[in-house]
Length: 79
Image 1 (cartoon, rainbow, N blue to C red):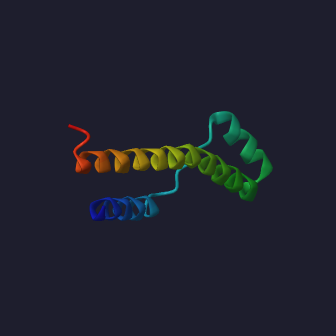
Image 2: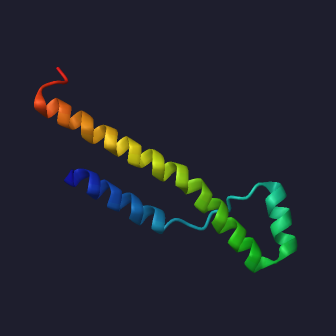
Protein backbone atom coordinates (compact mmCIF):
# COMPACT_ATOMS: atom_id res chain seq x y z
CA UNK A 1 0.00 0.00 0.00
CA UNK A 2 2.85 2.35 0.84
CA UNK A 3 4.48 1.65 -2.52
CA UNK A 4 1.23 2.59 -4.28
CA UNK A 5 1.06 5.96 -2.58
CA UNK A 6 4.74 6.66 -3.27
CA UNK A 7 4.25 5.79 -6.95
CA UNK A 8 1.10 7.93 -7.12
CA UNK A 9 2.92 10.87 -5.52
CA UNK A 10 5.83 10.57 -7.97
CA UNK A 11 3.43 10.45 -10.94
CA UNK A 12 1.53 13.46 -9.62
CA UNK A 13 4.75 15.46 -9.23
CA UNK A 14 5.98 14.50 -12.68
CA UNK A 15 2.66 15.41 -14.32
CA UNK A 16 2.61 18.68 -12.37
CA UNK A 17 5.97 19.65 -13.84
CA UNK A 18 5.02 18.68 -17.40
CA UNK A 19 4.94 21.37 -20.04
CA UNK A 20 1.62 22.72 -21.19
CA UNK A 21 0.06 20.46 -23.78
CA UNK A 22 -2.53 21.43 -26.33
CA UNK A 23 -5.30 18.86 -26.52
CA UNK A 24 -7.18 20.40 -29.38
CA UNK A 25 -7.80 18.94 -32.80
CA UNK A 26 -7.19 21.15 -35.83
CA UNK A 27 -10.83 22.23 -36.02
CA UNK A 28 -10.95 23.18 -32.34
CA UNK A 29 -7.64 25.03 -32.65
CA UNK A 30 -8.96 27.12 -35.53
CA UNK A 31 -12.20 27.88 -33.67
CA UNK A 32 -10.34 28.77 -30.46
CA UNK A 33 -7.99 31.11 -32.31
CA UNK A 34 -10.99 32.97 -33.71
CA UNK A 35 -12.56 33.30 -30.25
CA UNK A 36 -9.49 34.80 -28.61
CA UNK A 37 -6.63 33.70 -26.40
CA UNK A 38 -8.47 33.54 -23.07
CA UNK A 39 -11.38 31.56 -24.51
CA UNK A 40 -8.95 29.22 -26.29
CA UNK A 41 -7.16 28.45 -23.03
CA UNK A 42 -10.51 27.74 -21.36
CA UNK A 43 -11.48 25.42 -24.20
CA UNK A 44 -8.17 23.59 -23.88
CA UNK A 45 -8.62 23.20 -20.11
CA UNK A 46 -12.11 21.79 -20.66
CA UNK A 47 -10.84 19.25 -23.18
CA UNK A 48 -8.11 18.08 -20.79
CA UNK A 49 -10.65 17.86 -17.94
CA UNK A 50 -12.95 15.70 -20.05
CA UNK A 51 -9.99 13.51 -21.04
CA UNK A 52 -8.91 12.90 -17.42
CA UNK A 53 -12.34 11.88 -16.12
CA UNK A 54 -12.43 8.40 -17.75
CA UNK A 55 -8.85 7.75 -16.61
CA UNK A 56 -9.77 8.62 -13.02
CA UNK A 57 -12.78 6.28 -13.09
CA UNK A 58 -10.71 3.48 -14.63
CA UNK A 59 -7.97 4.01 -12.07
CA UNK A 60 -10.45 3.79 -9.21
CA UNK A 61 -11.96 0.58 -10.57
CA UNK A 62 -8.48 -0.87 -11.13
CA UNK A 63 -7.42 0.00 -7.60
CA UNK A 64 -10.51 -1.62 -6.10
CA UNK A 65 -9.95 -4.74 -8.20
CA UNK A 66 -6.26 -4.91 -7.21
CA UNK A 67 -7.10 -4.49 -3.53
CA UNK A 68 -9.76 -7.24 -3.68
CA UNK A 69 -7.36 -9.63 -5.42
CA UNK A 70 -4.72 -8.91 -2.80
CA UNK A 71 -7.20 -9.74 -0.02
CA UNK A 72 -8.15 -13.00 -1.73
CA UNK A 73 -4.51 -14.02 -2.05
CA UNK A 74 -3.91 -13.16 1.62
CA UNK A 75 -6.84 -15.36 2.69
CA UNK A 76 -5.56 -18.24 0.57
CA UNK A 77 -8.64 -18.40 -1.61
CA UNK A 78 -6.76 -17.41 -4.76
CA UNK A 79 -4.68 -20.60 -4.90
